[in-house]
Length: 399
Image (cartoon, rainbow, N blue to C red; front, side, top):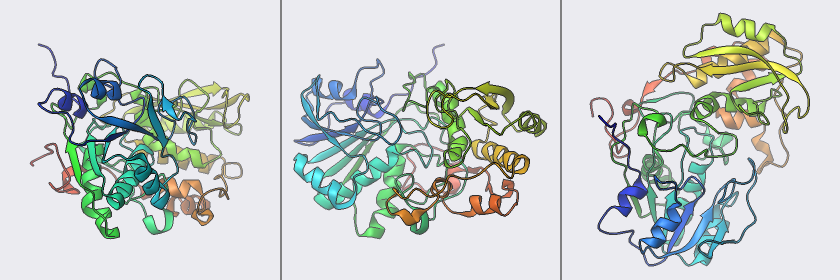
């Protein structure tokens, strides 16, 4: 018997009686905006007669050719001739002016989120929803699966007033458990109204998505959503080890296993030995030596651990990352540290990167005070216990 395949929002739209309402559509998308045969969403919509007149690109650019914190410089899309408007690091009035200048009356969002608060595609969506609300532009989300599944959430929320940034605009858990479409509904019923805004929102749901399943069970092709998330296991690991971007540990950028490989010049054999004693659920730790080709410790051979995720359903990314952090801080107290505040951050008083990633200063302050961080993990919780039916589009639990 052939397993059922999930049909994404774009596939539902293309198979329906109409395309998308609007006379001038701007598509907020990138290389993850694909049809099941791996064609581009933009090409499929244009071929179906949708009046797409502009493209909007996020971090990594429309084609995904650049690393984190960068965007491409192309101003038009050669296959279609459509103009490209760069949204990366634009928000507020500047983004609203960009939207108005584009002349579109509808923005359509189609990108693959990761299910992690500090992954920026959802905040590009959030910023563009704000801009659309300010300019009277409709907003449509073509929904896609949450790669980590939609049954559980975990990790801390975000103190928006103190630590809001482009890696977190709204108070959602670190592993949020929602699809992009559900997040859009949450933002439009909770966060935008708090600012006196509300967008004319339409979400095109998927069909055949099992919220308890990870991405592999959708039977959709995996398209790496950014250069350093090559596999689904990387996505699961990143949900926790992405926190190490704010430390002097290498998070494996510049290796073939980013976010699954963690290390530093000061790490020795005690770390893998300690971690193997923890019997952390769903993962096995392996002693590794590696030489990053770029980013932290580029060209330097260093030691660390590789996370081998053995059971995704049992694996808790946040708990695992805290276990690693606890061990490193205990074993190397004079050498492990957090990266200092980056004065280029806007505004600079946001301080330490790890605080923005965690959502508050509590994690850093616990380590600096010599306390274990394991107690900071709020643990996993059922999605339906936190969000209501004004947000959720797909059945969870007893709903």
